[in-house]
Every structure is written in structure tokens, then in C-alpha cells.
Image (cartoon, rainbow, N blue to C red; front, side, top):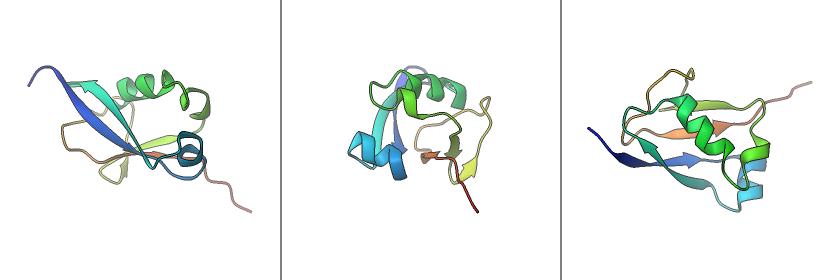
Length: 84
């Protein structure tokens, strides 16, 4: 497959509040990775400065930057968790 495809990224907590939505839609190149997705998110006009310490989950699993994101994958930004 070549070209671009939409990725719907689920947002939680502070990310959802600052964007004003529980989802942000991005376009990723076919064969794109979690690192590519991070780059798109970092360039987002609202989210860009709020991604420090966040993990990316694909299909409900934490993924490394080299993992490929495919059409139809469920993607979420997982904010840092603090405990006490």
C-alpha cells in the first residue's frame, strides 16, 4: 500500500482538555511508524508542547518508536502516571 491514511488518535486527561476533543485525526504515510506519528503529534499546534513523558499505545499495547502503524489501528496517547 502506498500513500497516506487517516489515524484517529485517542486523547485522555489533560490532552483531551487542551484539544477540546477525545480524538485528533492525523494523516500518516503508509509504512509509518510510532516515531513518525510522534513527529506529527509534536507538530500539532495545540498538543506539540504537551507530549513529554507520554507513551503511545497501538491496539491497546504500548509500542516502541520503530513499530509500524497500520490502517485501522487503534492509537492512543497515554499520559504519564503519577502515584503516591
